[in-house]
Length: 237
Image (cartoon, rainbow, N blue to C red):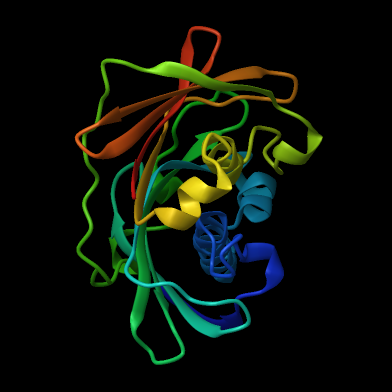
């Protein structure tokens, strides 16, 4: 299954340099995945009504090849590239007005039973291996760690951070991470590659500690709720 859509880089997904932002890239990825699942009647609203379940992101990695300026058109293509027993992998490919690659990414999702919190078999939602197509890109998840990390910020999860599933939306963690940089930091050295691993959920009212370190030319993050690791992330600039 696949989805293709054409839009423009609007002000909501632009950064301080006047180009498609990191937050915008993650927004496009999320929206493409949501719309593709919606075309299969497997979006969050549908699976909640039919199966009392919700999709959650497990991990995402993207690489930016070139920038797309504000008000420029782009084409985003999303396809299911792998269906496993309990997870689905989707690729998103963003091309600029010249039809050249600007961003490519890969996301893994799974479905949780709302009542028990257990991971469901994908087949129980009516999805199988026949829904998968050839991969759009060659991108692999990495294993990253940093032995020395310091607290960079502390945030409280508020109403605007919470999504339909009543937990902190996956993009909001990206916002928390990016806020540990200055404007000059990200204009002088923009984010070229990012990976996010979603380990646990957080909820309205939770106080999150954002820890940050550097290792081998990359920045490594860990967001914690008390003694629980909620997400881990790597940024290459």
